[in-house]
Picture 1: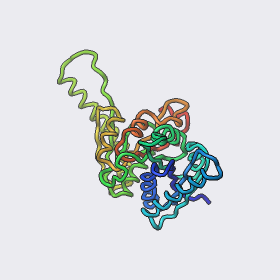
Picture 2: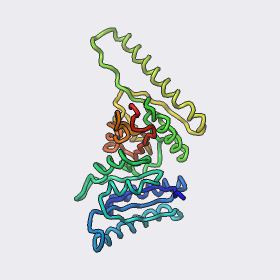
Picture 3: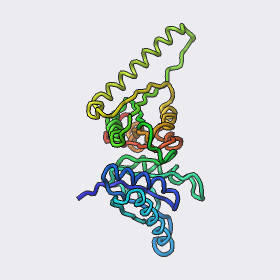
Picture 4: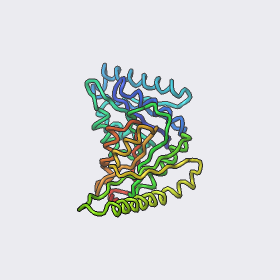
Length: 284
């Protein structure tokens, strides 16, 4: 029987603390098992494993301090973090990773590991960064017109409902550069018309989810900034940002996309990146 669980990956004594705390709270919220996976790149036996086991045990204790009644499993495995975490994700509903900003292996999870796990994971991935203890503000969701938009909105509405907070839907698009200087009033009118069209498109996508989650207040923002920059700006007042995993062509499901990458590096709160189940030929 498949065990419903959240997997949190840790890479050192301090790097995973915020991720473990966040994952323990989320597992409690979802009534799931929490599985803590520590992958160490050392000798699979002897002192290296003993030291790694201490890190894992400490992480389990941290999780229990946050959620005393939560069912928690600690796993210590030898090998490179990315493949070991992906192996552990086969039966996970969510993978949670932290960030490292200092120390001899600074950037380990923040860089290659987070991007590779996010790109290839069979489930959504959360990068815990910025204000890792943010419990106020809305859930922010980036809304585009990709085939995965419904999946992203479903996850975002559920996250907002479980937290009892509002949902801030952000639609960001760049205006085409004018080819010549024309009538300012006409240009302003065109911008207002396009903004109205974009807002209407968002409202159409939101409509069925508003019906399913009537208790979730929803606010829509239409922006002319780049999506990544606008969502980073929104992250300063949010407790979670939700976006889709976007790529192009035949390898679309193996790419995060520029917006997700920008958020992994710059967001001021945890970021949840939703995997599309539409298949590799999704023409996003």
